Amino acid sequence: MKFFIDTANLDQIREAQDLGILDGVTTNPSLMAKEGIKGKENIKNHYLKICEIVDGDVSAEVISTDYDGMITEGQDLAALHPQIVVKVPAIKEGIKAIKFLSSIGIKTNCTLVFNQGQALLAAKAGATYVSPFIGRLDDTSTDGIELISKIVEMFNFYQFETQVLAASIRHTMHIIQCVEAGADVATCPLSAILGLLKHPLTDIGLKQFLDDYKKVNG
Ligand code: G3P
Image (tube, rainbow, N blue to C red; front, side, top):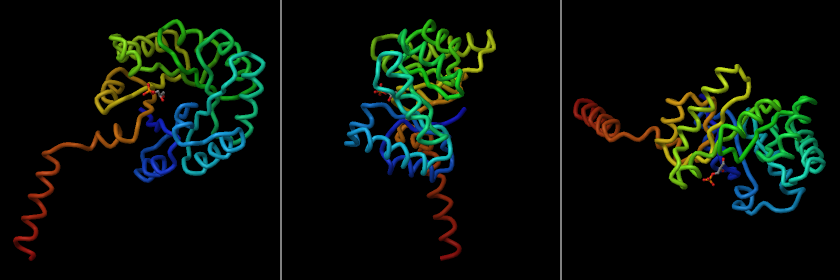
């Protein structure tokens, strides 16, 4: 499973990159706003800074909701850097835009996916990734991980090349559940990734090893 980090925070992206396990980055307009990045040029520059830090795909979201706007914006974003993946919402105009952008060789990430039907249409349109939002489904008493499993099963059955990118991951257990469900990618907050390393027996064992070493080596 590939690991993406779900943030526009450059320090966190660097920290995940330094860990050596990072395969890409996802952003969205809310994450950009959280970092105080505003204005078209600043936003574009910020995507470029992210591309300089990581080697893999960097999702940059369109803010248009009509077909013409999405394909113009999508082509502008894609022209910024070869690592850019154009993130498009799972709405009617978005599916049309994904079809067009895919047909001219631009990678796409269909975002705000909450059911199998949206994932199916995105895959048929040629999306590189579909992003089911598992945390937001969990927030509505609906099992987000179950949707990941169902989409993975559907894509395997019909041999779609579209990758399932589990998004809206809120904590470490979500990552483990994504592995079990067979997600291709999990895009996670840094805290959830670092949580994978947490175990008291590791800390206790390490302390014991170091104490024993000191006893005989001083
Ligand atoms: O990848 C999508 C993500 O940014 C949404 O996460 O926590 O706002 O539901 P959240």
